[in-house]
Image 1 (cartoon, rainbow, N blue to C red):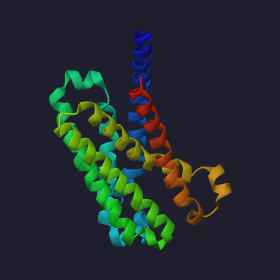
Image 2: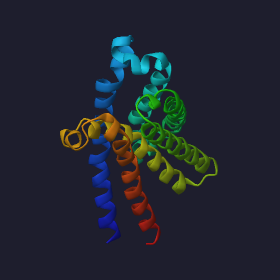
Image 3: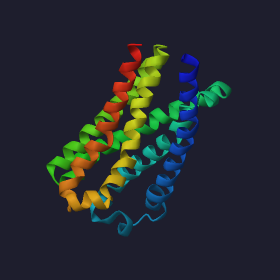
Image 4: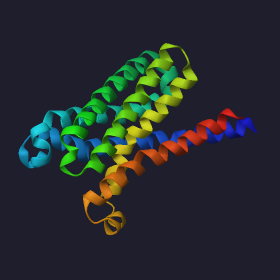
Length: 210
């Protein structure tokens, strides 16, 4: 039974990791790179332009973390390129620290232009994002590998939350229910990370009881 279960997990990861990498690449190329190649007020608009460098820090860190993540979760890559795995892990941690701190700043000085609800939602997500990757770093420093892997999973789920947020925010169904961004912004951002993180936590804790 255990061998069958392990086979299913390996098969699932075999398809999931390339899919996540493709999603990350699409998001970076379609959503992040335009802000680097079109560095002007037309691209950033009045909303971001006064704080453009904070958005750059957020996008750059998020983009790096999105692309690095699938490689870090690949056991084959980790076993074959252990030094590279450790190096990319450091880059991943630094990238999220930069991205999350930038998001925290924007939650105070950019997001209030929408409303307080959006500002609080972005702040909470960024804090959890930062805390998750710092916990992953602490666990690996203490050589608690299982805990490290679990915290890395949590941090990457929040990283993917920014992708899911944009999908939800642009969904025609969501826009019909909540026509204005003031209505849907906070709801979408909470759903994009809190729900997936809760599901992952249930799976992690369920496995501990076996």
